[in-house]
Length: 428
Image (cartoon, rainbow, N blue to C red):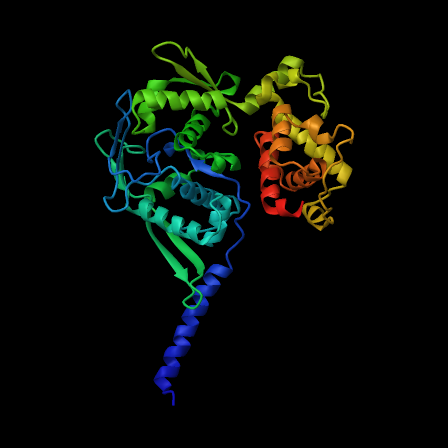
């Protein structure tokens, strides 16, 4: 027999559990929030740029000696990394979305579904991704920062961790995550709540794989964002100091040159100035300003050239200017051909079977549209597929997700075909 006391305890536990479930399952949808970064952390060394455990502190003093940043790692967890900063970007974006929606009494304690966070920052939702998230939150909570940013006197400084605490609610039966509550530090919360302190960033930021590349994007977005077509120029040595990198200067310089040579950071165009001199510099320009400048040169009243799928070699002399315009044109053109009116229509369209393309077929759309070297690589690496049909699917996806435009259409399509081939190669 169950006693009355036991019944009361069970009912109380059930009510508490119900409250916990409702707390997380009634959260508003933040899966499509616009991304915002906290600009006071974008150009200075607040994070380790390596995935290896860092136990050496960062001690930064600005050239004019007015700004200091000291980052102290925890011996057990190490220092929070630039990849851990992805979480802080999401949380800053979350707060900004609440403010824009007119939410009252916004709290530094943020309740969220970890799956939503992981999807938005492109970490995946596997069990390994959840483990990675917990490890990152441990580092963010354990890393100690001391800085005089946002203080009124040079002798004063603030000491904080990125997050004060986090709670993870897990279903006891299935061990599946039910939700998290992450409490931000007052320093970070107060900074983000001032809308002048946040800058928009590209969703493609999360696709940057190198630690230095992620830091350089953030620094470039902060430095060059408001400088128009002139951009911002800064010395390699200064970048080395501001990054907090543990790499020696020669190694750091080589990595910067590699990033500038690839020049594939989202939104940002990089150019090395005086590369052969003892003191090379990096010029950073937002690509949208370059496009605006090119349009002004063509004349304010001159219409932009219509999109075309006959791209000549000469058209590739300035990929930074042409590629975004070409990608949008392709999406618009193919959306009209496929009569794509909404994401739901795209998803509802029946999928055609992808068959091998006859060798005698006329020159395909893929051959005309893609960069020649990438098209040849696709044919060599993944032979036998109807690339026009795969491109139709790819463009339908982009048409339904205009915020996810690739930096390089051809390269992204190569990855799309690679994944299709991996999944379906045994069906050929």
